[in-house]
Picture 1 (cartoon, rainbow, N blue to C red):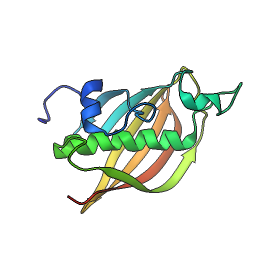
Picture 2 (cartoon, rainbow, N blue to C red):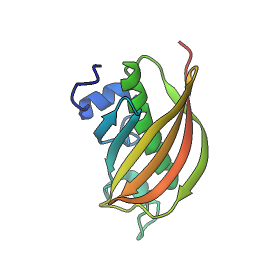
Picture 3 (cartoon, one colour):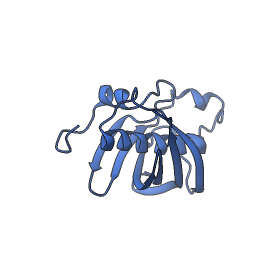
Picture 4 (cartoon, helix red, strand yellow):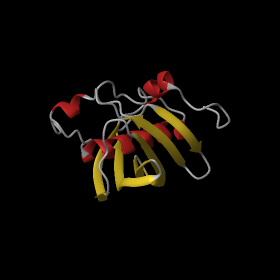
Length: 151
């Protein structure tokens, strides 16, 4: 994919990630900077999310692990675009999460904005610096390591 092409739409995101409902947690790519190796992507958090049935009835809160997963998926989109691959080329798995912090609850109606930077790439692994925001306010951050399957 050329670095001057338009941002991927939902159909293209689905070619870049193997995830599907209810675990596809990237709705839109807002921006990509190939030189800085950064992406901003969003997830519209709806009351219809299946996890809200049990987390928690009467006080729905998006689970922190799913916020981390959403950030990792945004990183996956960035990696796939940077490498010019699609979801069938190579699967990446989250293998480590460091420095995870949750500073504010994410609730129905929020737009979760994932800011992800590729910190470094080592062989078939990538380390991502991730920050999640809602309305410009940081709600979570983590460093995520993902490893790809061997080709």
